Length: 472
Image (cartoon, rainbow, N blue to C red; front, side, top):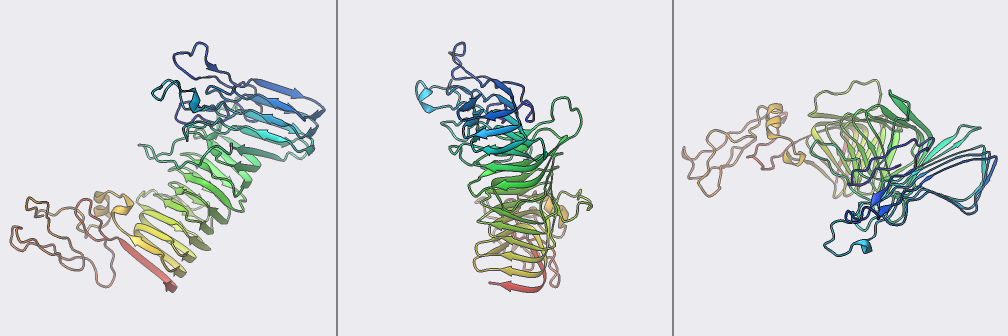
């Protein structure tokens, strides 16, 4: 309902601003599907002047089965109490399997439902709101987190809560065969019913807790957030897909397991962006607005075939073999940054603290101050970037990346060496005798990558232009 199923095909539906649909059913066993349907949460609508909740308002899925949470829609003036409002998805437990070989019991838990509360005064409310996705005995098959939308009808201040159960573990997403990241287990923002063209969701606050995963559905939807809040206990995810736009005005510190901007996606973030605890900070599309980037606590960062700018009026690159990582302030990376293709890193100050790694094929660093601390590395290697050797040879025509006409193989897998500034060694069985590879490139302005055979790791290029270089 509110969140996508994980690896089980169930997609989110409904309206986060006005829930008017119940949840959807699941099954615990294909054999017993006629009488073992997981019961989904229903639909509750409340309109009142004074709402006091000391007990439970519950439209959760049944405890067994893969059913989703339902919908709760409330309009009130005074909102008070210390009770609970919940639309939790159904859990799936290992004990339901009839035997270890039972393949009929799906491990997929139900997604969370939808809650919307409109009020004029909530100063007396101190209860709990839960739109958790259900948990599964097989991680990461937990259901996607549902939505909880709260709006003050006097001030129009609104917030979106995405909070997962403490039992949901963080998950590192991998690209599919098309180079995209899947929307499994994600809470997608949909185009509301009745809207047929581009729609913008705007929230004063978006709060992500636990392993909740925020995304968007389709290519005609955007998200604007005045204040993004992710607590230190957060290990969720944010996804910006092709044709989608995310704009965040303020985020004191981003604690997420995944921050992913796919190719064709656009994210505009605050001027100073601090990212902590992130397993993947991936930019395949556009990251805009950032002048000071701080990657903290061993963040793994991939800036892959994208364009990172400081002004929204800059044109995007059409050459997918080049990155421009252009910041006006500081870049501080304590993790591993991987730059694909030809990459230019510009900043006033570029710092790799202890353990930091900058890795790529063709790296240019242009900064007034460049500091590479003890046990930090700037690495340039052709195959680390997974770049096609044919593409590299096109970009560097004077580099011998492919096997030359007279490569020698004596039948035991030995081949002659390759060259750059120095001529290669030879193999005595090679015809003609003493065959070797000639050198190439410039002594004064090295501008070619090294050469290698097929999957060999040839050296790349590192250019550093700075006023002060500190190398420890």
